[in-house]
Image 1 (tube, rainbow, N blue to C red):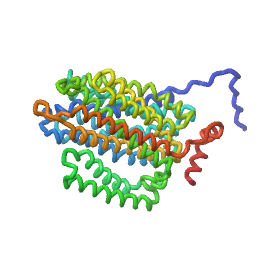
Image 2: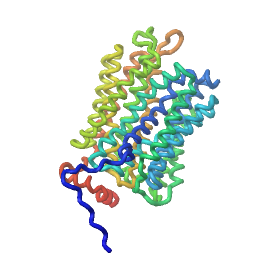
Image 3: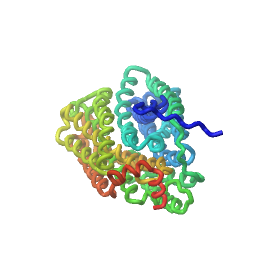
Image 4: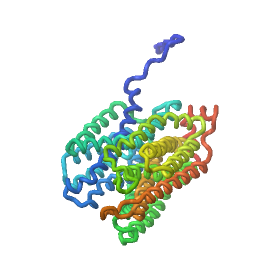
Length: 497
């Protein structure tokens, strides 16, 4: 007995609406990215008070930030690779769950050791964005993919802009543990929503997980970022810092040798060394450096005492509100970034974004005394960051096979993280070197801030130059649409390249 013939849809009939779960996939993934960024920034308003609240030294308390940075840098490429192999939704849900557990531990304890360990757990959430971008590539049609990926990339800045004033308000008007109970509830909601609304991607990269490669990369990154983040405290010429940098060179050289010989490496270095991928990673590192200086310097500048002659003496809540327009701008401009990438290619979008960042720092150098000019300059930098950050994953998606998108984007996010850590160390070094005493306490001079802006602007121009050297984007017109309609054929071609 034959199967019944399908009943054709009458002409003019609108297609059935997508199920609610499918329509919520993008909002749920974006909310996870925002929550991750919020979780990374909520501890910042607490830093001045944590020594009193925990009985620990200021140097020890700083590890509540350093631990998250180190854990995120190590776990992002590792979880990205594991997602490509074992399932992206599974690893995404696990990363959000670790973040939530870390938040619960912070809410339950005032012991500095527990807080540092909990913040390290929260570092796993750094992999949320690359895993989500990989899911969007696998699940969305080509015409929706660009705007969704742009929005996902922008969540890092949006969440950071929202997290600082939110945390400052909670810290000012409630017990500091309340902040972590709030983020714990949001994290639990995010885990449940992700498990319900996000489908497991069928695209997998089979093989055994490269445990040796993961351990080697972890050791190299911890040595590098620990030296960079603690150099100002321990002394850049101290035996500990020099030893860490020497260990970084040795360990990463051995890791590179091992990866080239592994059958299924953690990071496909042959793919990384292709100009389209490698130069995209270089641009990510430079853009991360340029972007991070904006938040660091703006927060310190507006909180500086009025007695300095340039400071505004704002509270931490008011400081967060100064950065809020930048977060709103990132949300509004992410669709524009997708349209520019669709028409001109992500390489041009990245170069344009880096140039806009440089223009923002030019505004900061022109006037860093009036509040409205400070906010305008910071918002222009945020706008450029939106364009650049939204273009980076699109460049990676077009350059790597579908089975390696999570790991490749994980490496790209890692490069941004290294850029941000380097920016933090460089800005601190400039401000410490250009300080003058005020009431017996060294305070950065306006000249020091302007030098930091100039440094970040120069790095942004270097990112623009790196973007323009990336080989041409995918073909335009009908050829590009044909390839987008058949991503499998493109990925097979990339595999064979």
